[in-house]
Length: 456
Image (cartoon, rainbow, N blue to C red; front, side, top):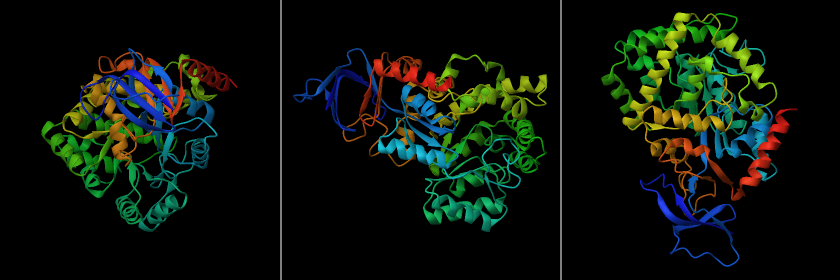
């Protein structure tokens, strides 16, 4: 048993920090939380004095792609206090990693894993070298079969993508509902966004697909989305250029009244939104990418080279100076609309799109929270997007997402108040994952171990 004493607990389900509190952990569970004078420390318990320090729930990155060296990626999550992830493109490797983590054979976060990505024909990823082959569907029968295969593979949800036709899209939602599987992912280019909100999709990813529904002429801009046609070399690059054109026009004819109506539908249907602003920042402002970023020592070997290739061949190919200027404006508009969603009560869940260009496992989630505060959220609202809100979204609220009696001992302990400055989430003293305390010395050892592994 371990007793964390004289801590300030950040109460993400309430409003005010709980000062001078004791948190008792037995095994992988929190068995008591209360004022220091009211929670006795059992005889024989290991005592950890947290005077001047702050205890938060472990963080959740709700949009990850944890391919690469598992020891590097999984270790980087834990090093940064990310104790849960939602994997958005399942693979055999990710299921094997989860088995090892749950068995206690390796260090890593809890994970919720999608099935193989389901897309229309041709898929955005069908001609990208090295990409995992998606499941491509062209009609309702193939779409229903893809959902069945997702369930048979043991996946937790269906991940859908941008090029699904209306018949396939609705068949996936219907079949998944029948089988009790959630559906999450991109919006379809071919189905109006509002129709998708009403159709049962549980979450939408990234701040681009929603713009046509928020503009002055949604019918025209939704039609423009549906007219996008893919060209080779590569499908993704051609799609990205065309989406940029649509979103530029839509974002610049933004109508707050239409946005309010759309956001109200998201709230009414209990649909979550995962903005991945840190990913958008990297793609809208690619000059921020630095191949010599010191955090790259915590990424898989060859990742920097892969990111440079992706930037050159998928995102920057054909980008003019005029388009680059538009992208800088678009990023500011993306931040503004995230703030507007928060004001409207939309459930925001923090995700980063690890391993998008420059998005480093673990570190990126702290950047995402900082971007949310810069978009108008309070530090407490930002923390909720990475703690209690993803727990509620995943149906884990009864046992995860906050520092409360009976919940799992997944904790982040920091040296300064994150409610005073959200950047203080990076001032990490210790991490607790499944009840295992990883203090300063062990964290330093883990960091060094990751660096050695990444250098191989």
